[in-house]
Image 1 (cartoon, rainbow, N blue to C red):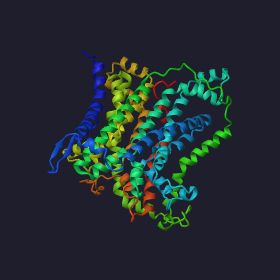
Image 2: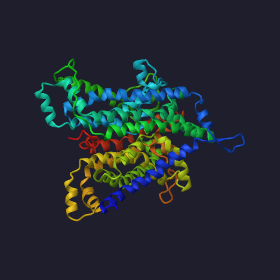
Image 3: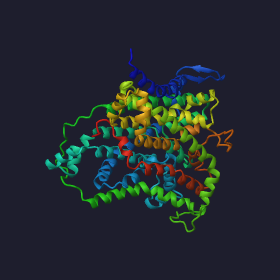
Image 4: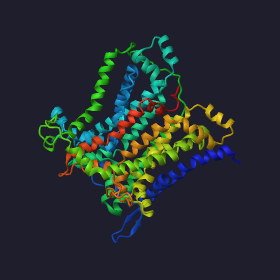
Length: 568
């Protein structure tokens, strides 16, 4: 018979588990069932393997698989190769203001980042083509560049967090052994933070495997969308345009993605949760054994900052230009006349979209907090569910969001919540809650245990200990996690595309419509009559929550990304 403590700890986890069963496991099962349903010539449903056979005959499927393979390999490889030196430079320079600047591109809506790069890479109006004379706009490498730009800071943050968590006595021992510079990095630091390196690598594989937002934005202006399309985006297109046949084939591709995600998730769980061994130094005697001069570190950091901040600068300049200057050939760098017309129009026209984004993101953050925080505490402190629950969390996190799309539509239709704020609020946590539980799990793993013990001595139950003591003292972890959840919800694109079809009707008593700011930004680029000044201004405004997150969380966010075996 379970003790009262175990029962209460289980109750804390139960809401999160029930949610995941309804909104993650059930949609996956429904998606798998749909793979066997096709349509006969008479319109009736036929069960069989036709979708599996026909899915691999889709026009352009070989290019789609090639692109997916390229994104899966190139993005994590480039990310890790660039993140290790950047994290090392940041630790060496030890300037607190640098990390928030570096992180900005990872915390903005993906659709906004894609818009920035589309403006720069466009061979007609983008200035990069006129500088490099290379047309990357219709190449899958343009998506790789965008993916690296948005994911590199996160990889850097995880590795930087690991480096910062190395105990001082390790550095002191290295000095006594005469190790410094690159030789110390490869023989001591990197082996010590192996868990952080491996977790960052797997996360970047997840990031690159199932790209959607950049392709959605870039293909709107591209004359050859198949050149950059991956499996996620093809699945979405099949669902949108193919009727029952398209939905069945989309379900097949989504099932294939689920299999790949399962492998990635198992790898992630294995690497993230196992104990890290400290023994077995690597020998790199050919590496320089002296500290890099500070000036050289600054030089390389500035190069990184140019890559990371250039799109922001270009977008900001575009937002103050007239339409004539935006589409001018050759491109106009600085506006001759500063105009705020784009901002006025974006606030006026985009108001319903902004309101929906704010309400849905706030609602999602609160729902994730009430469900996720108790679960993370119970799993970390009371080992509820053991590693199996964390494995489930990481598995759901590794799944591409598009996998849930078809069953989610049916779920919301059945309860009349399609195209509504509530429909988005109750479905968003399926991709927001896993990462927030993981972050809080790390946070509570290093939370002082004597606080729980003191509460128990005072006669408090598990509920009382958590809600009356632990939660009140979890301000750092909760605040950063809530802000992070808000940012993820703010930048969501696939769910608003699939689950809403009209903007908010501006009636707060009888609200209808739920299209968000990501639809306003990403769904209209490429339209001939669209005002690009308005788009630029709306994109700049969409950055505000991310900037606020970086500012308020600048001193605490690295602590939430320290993975097992790296916390000193």
